Image (cartoon, rainbow, N blue to C red; front, top):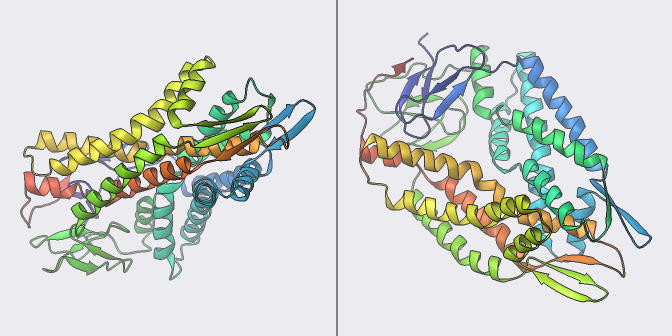
Length: 418
């Protein structure tokens, strides 16, 4: 049996996978993208981590994140309460997206990772193993608990002068959950397929592959196989349908970018929330919230919110436009810079949801009947749409096409051995 093969998802360079020391990282020799790493954690350790994450997830959503009191009235604010109040107020899009990104998707990520590890531990893969890992691959992109944690901190700072506030047990649980999910993010579907491959439970990537003809890696499981002339095939290992290159990627990216750019205008012009007090109501925009934090003396949080809510969305729109306009620039150095830019866009994508989560949490923290209430406004929904569209645009972009134009690889190029 030949060596296992790996195709770089960013430049399509073919590599031979070798065993690494614990903690070591294998990077693409062409573009520098991290292909895989050898974890210091064993399979039982990963499984224990998922059980711990599930327990902490339940605690974080059961206990309040804060206890507040105002003029003799008191309340306890939690994530489920914030979702319910926002739904009752009629801000359905904000409530649904927040419920998915902060509750459903993180829970699904934990459960599917736990299920896959249990299958590997029993050394018996069910017939739907490949479908479960596809779901896990999709959920990992949209799990935003660390963003929610930062949103809780920002919301508390905004309320520092309005109510007496005491930190809740749920806040500490969300802090621990953010750490655990950050660690679990390294347990990707690709890593689980490699673990199954090393255990001899699935076909080895590149098995029976003719390297004198064009090859490609499955986008679902990474299995390297020959591609037909049509450029479309089914994966031999997981039966997923994939293309040699993403079809009509440019059209989708431009359509998403243009739509996000149009929606970005009402997202910043229209208010994201309205604060109702006995003395009257006041509407707040995204920039207004930054100025308010600065006025409280929290210049550090004001800077974070400004970067996450203004700089990051604009940078994503600009960076993706540059990547699309410069697809035919030549030279390995230029393409490596473009690859780094694309990796940065992927990394910062979800942090723009910060303002949406702040509005959601404030609706639960300021819900004192007859005294104060925070209501989500259309600006928050438009801003959430901008974030989602830019994330889809980044996922639709195909960085391999830039490398194809800069330095086409011959069909029979041999894999690189480290």
